[in-house]
Every structure is written in C-alpha cells, then in structure tokens.
Length: 118
Image (cartoon, rainbow, N blue to C red; front, side, top):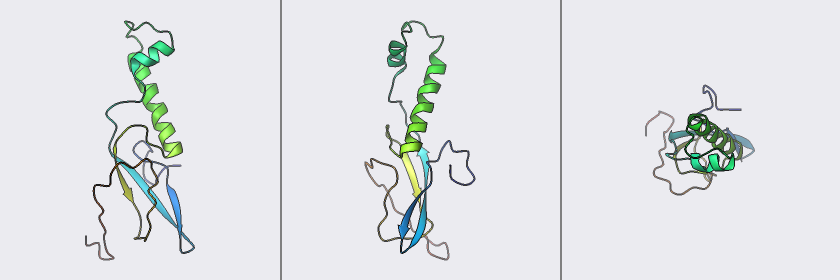
C-alpha cells in the first residue's frame, strides 16, 4: 500500500502515470506536516456530547482526528489541510500530473541527470 521502505506515516500511496506505454511511479513524502486538524477537539466533543470542560479524552480525540484525516488523505490523495510535500519521479517526463490535490504552489523543481548531478 505504501512506498517502499516506509511505515506509511509520512508517505502517500504510490500512484502511476502511463507514459509512452510504461508506468512511471510517483512517490510523495510529507516534508512539513499540517499544523492543525480539520476538526477541533471542541467540535468533536460537541458531536459526541462530551462536556467542553471534560478534558479526560482530549489526547485520544486528537489522535483519532489526526488518524482519520491521514487515512482519508492517503486513500483519496486529497489534502484537507495545507502542508509541504516532496513529489519524486524516477525519471523526467514531459507532463507531470501531481498526485495530491489541491496544489497551492510549486516552490521548486530539481532534476538530477544520469550522473546524479543537479
């Protein structure tokens, strides 16, 4: 399910793009994770009818929210919260389809030739 050599926590599911009759695998890694979650602890407590002053479940709720967001994002390749990703391809292709959406900005593109020179 996840990229080779990872535990899956900082990677999205590999995707392939068909180029000249061959599959080109995309590897996407989280460089800077989200700083917030799409659902707050307060919103989760309200939904679950837990009193706002009851903080005995806050750590567990936070972990569940983060896990649910992460699973959704990996399964759908849709980012719910802004973060920085590194998108790697094994070779240069003319048209690159970024596999995680939406894309807000591309900050750099680095190409390494056959001799591993940038």
